[in-house]
Length: 448
Ligand code: PLP
Picture 1 (cartoon, rainbow, N blue to C red):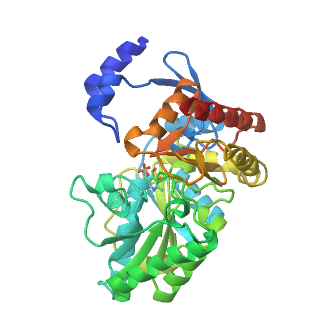
Picture 2 (cartoon, rainbow, N blue to C red; picture 1 turned 45 degrees about the horizontal axis):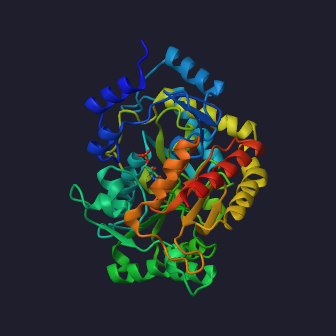
Picture 3 (cartoon, rainbow, N blue to C red; picture 1 turned 135 degrees about the vertical axis):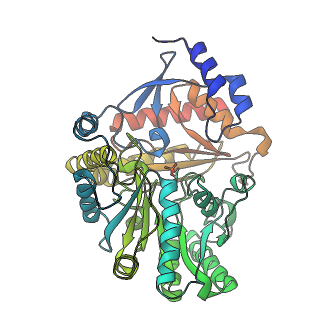
């Protein structure tokens, strides 16, 4: 039985609490009901087609409706829909995925711990990091340093690692032992510096925090190679190598949260490869299955893995769905598709330069104060005064106005404050990128 949009909205308002949503205002406005997807487009219950420039939520990297992924799920559901990786059992898809991940991730990674999401992955990171330092005889090394405006998930540990002030205001966050430093946001804080100078300055905020906390107390530093949900904050090229140097100097573990950047989004398989650093741990989710089914996890570098395996005894942590066979089968199909079609290489050589070209054209728009791109992700900073880079009064919610014009005109684009961001599928044609560029300009004109 199909329903009218009004009927869907009424049932939704009656029963469904949406994530990151003002429940009351959504039920007054009514939600948009997305019913179908194909390629880079989705359709709503009114029949409107939308170009999905956010790949769902930074995840549908191979586009909607890919037969290989659907068949992999169906076959595994028929063969064995569930079995766990607890109690000395496992399944062929979990084994094969672990093997493939060890092959495609940087060479320091030979082991993976599976979970169901990026948030669970970052909870696992906290447990692994602290366990490692316990086993190393340094239990006081329990502080993890992260960044303001970072997003590392919604569980208690994930949200604590994250630096979203709105999240910290609710529910007794952050948990103990988490410290934050400023993000490398050149547009906001880098004025008067070159980008390269600012990258070094921002990295050295980490060193200052290590000294403040005490080097023998700091366990790890975690960051997204490019801060995604924070507004596609692309760090200067000097930032990550200097962070790496500082972590090495103080013996601190380096964690790359690759939930958005992983699996080709930045033009290499992993963001740490694009920015030239060598993490000890790597969180992943989203693009591992192109969002077709939930799966996440942590790649565990040999520095930790050897200690945890050889000396750790039982690691008291895990999830029912760690290594879920259907999710692992879909991930295998997805990653093999990326390999077979050369998706990552095409992002690097063809799509990312074309996306960057479009955003350079958009930089001349009167509303745009800055453009930033990295691989297949990009941001436009909306400003009130282009000459002085003065920003709008936040209460005007200009980003939300622009986003509404996008939605009304067939484009899914996200607003983070007054930063308009895209992270489109990694399989677009050049013509589709051109269509997206034209739609963005049209929506900016309507926002003027
Ligand atoms: N880490 C990063 C960098 C993310 O962007 C996200 C989600 O957007 C997460 C972690 C949390 O992942 P999940 O929503 O799958 O729990």
